[in-house]
Image 1 (tube, rainbow, N blue to C red):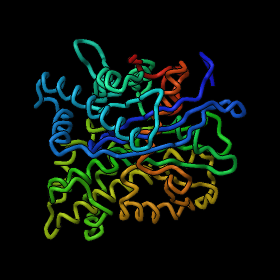
Image 2: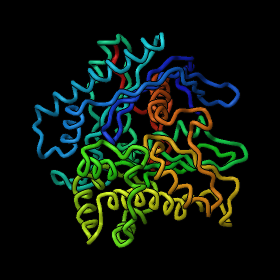
Image 3: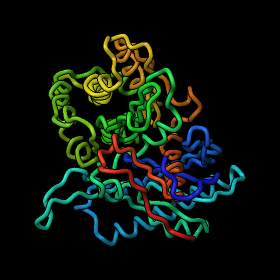
Length: 400
């Protein structure tokens, strides 16, 4: 790994608020450089989750459909989120009796368009993560790294996924293939062949994970999510709804690729819900179908793209593990669907907790790592994951 300055051990607070828009995760990590492997190494010191209030979540979700939100509200929301990030980091450090050297904030994604569309006469791609870092730097009197996606996007990449650097650093294995699956609002996978080098890593977004399920639960029950998959477990999968959705062009597009609420947000959920309005179909059936949609698109992505990349030549690939993280890993019905479908391929489904990292901490820990890399002027993107033309240093620095 290229080094611009001599790396030093630092305590970094990584902050993540994902496309589910359900709250803030903070992971405080010690990040240092391993001279033997010539790679960073990371130790989780503390982790906490901070749910958004109902009002904040409503405002964030409204901002993602910005036709109904004023410029003033967008500006105010960014500054309010900065204060919430500062609160979350401060509380986590105090509870764990820790001091940090840096804060690394992903921010709240409001818009992510990795495919060029015509704007003011020219093809334009863009991404926007909200949350004012100056508020955090001033409150905590610490340097803040933020806005990680634009540098990769400017270099021709998708700007996502960025978690594969953590996946490679923490989970590569000498003798086993490992597939890391994150179930946030969007599902993304990182495929790491046994004994892989960084350029052997494949990663991409498979489609929605919790996003559609959560939106349906909010409409049907007023609840933010399907706790333990209880609602889906009561329902039956509507195959006549599922089949045409699996034929959507996104799922056949080859990686690198990324997606978000632009593809699977409000408009998609409304179309999904209406498709489920069949005779004798219940709300639980609709949620079960959305859950199966998530599971099947993940398995289809494995079959089409991951399995060939790992070099498997037979259905029973005993050397492959699927390690799941993110809030969706708490959905027992979704996890059972994945285990049932992956059993045919001999893939063992586990969670990252089985190998030492809490499932809710992974993405925040990833940005702690990326913040450390940025501070040392080291690249943080994985070109084979994002499709960027070159390795780039990610993010921007706000000094205290």
